[in-house]
Amino acid sequence: MLGLLLILRIIHILGGVFWAGASFLLAGFVEPTVRAAGDDGRRFMMRFSSQSGLTPAMLIAASATVVAGLWLWWIVSDGLDPAWLATGRGTGLTIGILAAAVAYIVGFVMQNLSIRRMTAIGAQVAASGAAPSPDQAAEMQGLQARVRLGGRIVSVLLIVAVVLMATARYLPTF
Image (cartoon, rainbow, N blue to C red):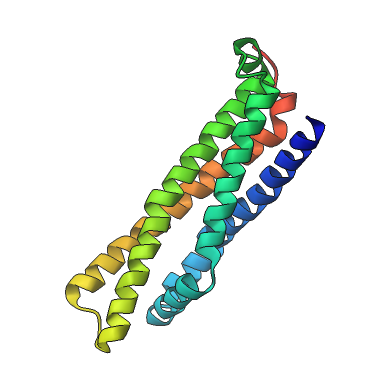
């Protein structure tokens, strides 16, 4: 059991560090810079999202983090024992897990799917050799706004998750 706990903690911590760190970097620094750069920023982001591999890497890291976290939660709570869940540690970890799970869903729905659609539109535009149509441009702007909002929501939820998971053992039971 100790070996399993160690493996799950390593996956959970390393995956979480990558997921949260990349989210904070993108939402806090890359996205505002790209937006300020205008068309050059848009071209950079299209190439970055289609060629860097960051989006699938973040999805893998987030998925591994959530799965390992849920498994750890099950183990440390003795199968979600209500008495343990009512402790400060149990409550803190449970709220942290919920925040991370919502961040995962928001990241997938608002960001991952939108980035995939933007990449597809970018490929259509590149293949045509023409400028984006007004419909394509409008859809791209809507998708960019959705990705930006999703990034902010995910970052806030991940801050909540990280803080609660890091401090759960010190939270009092009421």
